[in-house]
Image (tube, rainbow over all chains, first blue to last red; front, side):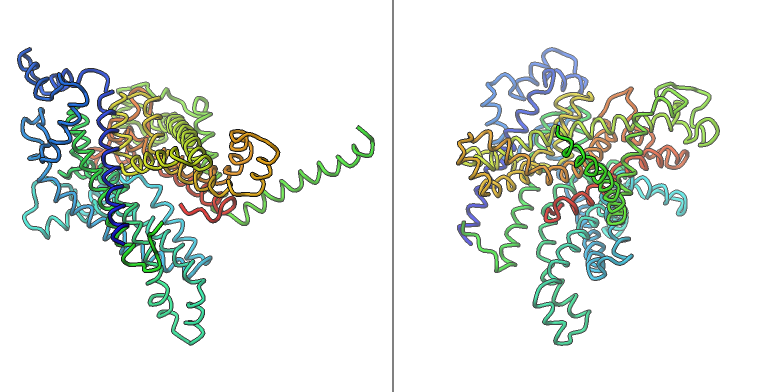
Length: 315
Length: 297
């Protein structure tokens, strides 16, 4: 286990290093000079300011030195400077993290609360009309763009409630904020719940075919006990992996949903930075997202190894 | 050809026709959802192909008198703020969605098969390097990767296709690799090697064709996600540029402010995206059940 942990940790660092190179190179092939673009975007005028910008960004140094400066800066928590709002990028990003974290957490809770029970129901009633209906619903969940679902929710609120649940001022209390965020969270989480439901169904179907389920039924255990105590507990394991897979997907949903509901989160900040063509900030934000996704996957793998004693990592 | 052979050929041909007719009926009966998906996909393909003939307006023509026209009359689905006919924009938008979807999927599968086959069949350090590269690509969310790539490449139809295809590569490469790993040990590969066939020909002639079933299933699933990512990119204003009518951008133009005043501008483009993706997903599920039931997506 310890050697597996160390190997997995080294692999994670290697992956992150690779991603950092990919992002760094990608943003160097942007057509045009970054200094020129930033210079325009920030509305600067004098040639002296431009020269200062070039040396601040280190654009006059060799590319390998630029890369090293960037990575060591990140390790020290230096996220650069946003030239558009004229303050350190970290000050823009830090207050946004809790907002996005709350939204993502609520979306995951929604996905599990809706997806697991419906997936179990679908598996237990395999090939009945109810199963067909639930499968169509879950497939439609994977087909609806989450920004459109968000717009439809807004539309329903305008029509029937007379107000729009978008984020204008910071809500007064945590409860208020969570209530407000639960609406966009449903828009993001619907997709994830569909995926959870599909995986729960197929994982349950596999478990329900096992011998020990037949034994449980044969000894006269009630259907409820068999389905929930015997089958679901064993079927839950693959469902944990979905949280790892979904972490990456969730970011995509968060980007568009934060835009629709006007939520001041990290994901929307990425789109704003791309629109402002503030590439140093884009580079740092993408790296930040990669670190979060890779870490979530790492912890999911660890949880999996701890929870399933049948799995041995020795190869 | 001998007469006897010709006579034998006749009933065989008619048998073949009867078989394909009965297999269509079988498909409809056994996979009603898949048949529904195939119908939706076919309808959207037809809409894209016939867009010139089934619409009455140029999708880019503006008309101040028709600004925000309600659905009905000469504008069956209404008109947007600039008076552009929504039905025309949706029909022509199908071309963009399909072009991006099919283009990105084809490109993604091409790279994926190339990488998956090399790393699965030939193995060694190439395999190790390819696996780590795929790990990296997979750690970045699809939309984030596409966003950064389209920002780096600049907005154009070709660049959007390229930007969406790269994040699709790892999934394809993984599945093809695991298939190639299994096929490599098969007796028929050993037989081919025994006849003195070189490794490259074995990989291309014997291993590659056998990965076709999972590839078809994967490509169908990827088509749906490519269409969704294009819509999201365009919705965020970083996808297909003007003047192409893209479903996603139609929503960004109309987004929150028209929710109150002109709901048809929000409902129809979203419905088009959802139906297109839903159709490919239904079809993909049925194809998986038929071709490769063990593959889990």
